[in-house]
Amino acid sequence: TMLASRVILALAALSGAAAVCPNACSGHGTCGEDDVCFCYQNWGMADEESGDCSEMYCPYEFAFVDTPDEDGKVHKYMECSGKGICDRSSGECECFDGYGGKGCQRTTCPNDCSGHGTCEYIDELTFGSTPGEYYAAKPANFSMGISKTTAMTFGSIAESWDSGKSMACVCDPGYIDVDCSRRMCPKGNDIFDTRLDTSDGLKYQVQNITLVAAGPFGNGSMATYGEFSNQSFALTFVSTLNESYTTIPIVIGDTLYTSDTGSTDAFEKQIKKALEGLPNGVIDEVAVGVNFGSAYSDYDAYAAQWQLNIKVTFTGAIVAGPQNFLIPQVDECLAGCTPKITGLNLVSVQDATGTYSRVTEMERSDYNNYECGRRGKCDYDSGICECFEGYTGLACGTQTALV
Image (tube, rainbow, N blue to C red; front, side, top):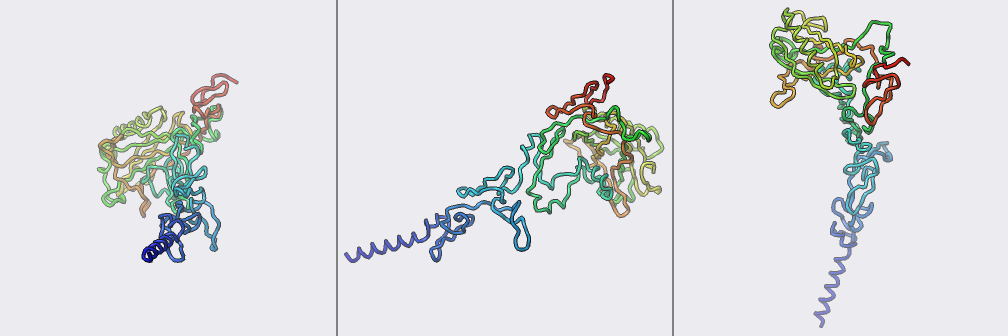
């Protein structure tokens, strides 16, 4: 009939209208004017923003390498950071070797640091092993005193375009190389050339620890000895193999500031015992001197500021060469802590008058410090020195025969 024919024509027209856009935009977009799909976010087709919306885009991140724009700018956003191919069926990047993460946004560490280190961003890498190394290399920056108990990092690096992209291995103690694959061997003096300059007097490394009481205003003024009395702190030593050791609590007596030499002697012996008692014999011998006077650093004769000075001289054969700076542990750490210390209230950052707590090198050691004492080869698989004929010892520091 005429009515049936009209119904069939209407249904055919509707069917045709529903199929105007390609594949009905694959269910990932809407059909617009001129039969063009407007795809939902992250959907498109190949490199087009339209098509049939059947393929997914991959994450965009700052490119490692790309062509400059008209203003000469590079490192713009790029799919998979320009270091991977997009799998458009899943919207995930297939990163090239050496790259990983969402959108291949970061480098990977070589050999996953061989299982002997952690993979860290470039702005998390440090200068040296201890804070003292940075301050010694750049004395103008001693202004941070002992406010840091870890090696120096630089906030300025975080502003670099690759601060969240470039990564490197930070090796565990006893391991070295870019992939942390090599064991470190003991270091020591060359027994035939123990000193760098034998024409001068014998020199051991001397470190001075200056602890300045903060007082009620935090700048050292109007401080009292009570801020030291019966309080405790600890010292951390980082060996030349990057192994960290922290002493037992060191307690400051209540009469140290007086002329009571017995109290001073006891305190010096306490520090010496704590350092020489560290595990594995990492410090075999030190000499310790303590005072509140001007012998070891500047001191306010009017007692407006209280400064405890601890001079540590590394005299042992194992620590005869250059050593990392000691790290004072002065923050309160009580229940559940090892070591358990009350901490000290100190001026940790330099103020306008230049008074602050710090660790300095009073004298450099003129002893050398070579891998295997320069009298053997390091087996990097085991970390054991293979001494040349006629030599023995952990660092080949003992002669067994005349050669």
